[in-house]
Structures are given as structure tokens and as C-alpha cells.
Image (tube, rainbow, N blue to C red; front, side):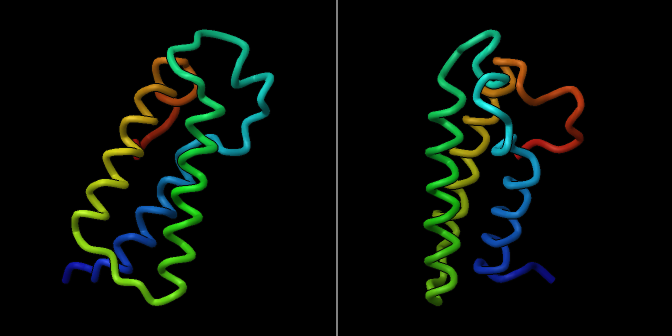
Length: 95
């Protein structure tokens, strides 16, 4: 049985928090190739995730479009981080 959209959104948020290097120090994040500001992208994504966590806690039910939009944003940011060499080959899952 497929999860409801609230459960799916919580699962997506948990997976993104596992895969993305939110805790990486800025000096390590900004020491090599830069094809987009990893710090700004991760800050933006963290705000998006926190907003959805708050909205879910308030009882909001996300639509499938909301899940799709957040998923696309995560994939785009992941690709930039991958180009910068901050994620990738050692990860087993992509957001």
C-alpha cells in the first residue's frame, strides 16, 4: 500500500536530510570547484524542509504536486553539489 502524501513528504524530508551534507563545514564546502554556491543552496533547501516540517506539524496535507516540486528542487541541488564534488560516488542514494 502506498503512503498518504503526509507520510510521503515526511519520508522525502528524512531521505534528503540523510543524503545532503547539511553539516559540512563551510571551509570544506567552499574549497574546491564551484558550479553554484553550495552553502546558499543548502541553506535554501534547509529552509524549504523546515517549512514543510512545520506545515506538516500544523496538519497540512501536501498535494502530489508539492511532493513533485520539492523532489525536483532536491534533485537539482544534489546535481550541483555532485558537480562540486561534495556528494556522489560514496552515496548509495540520490535525493
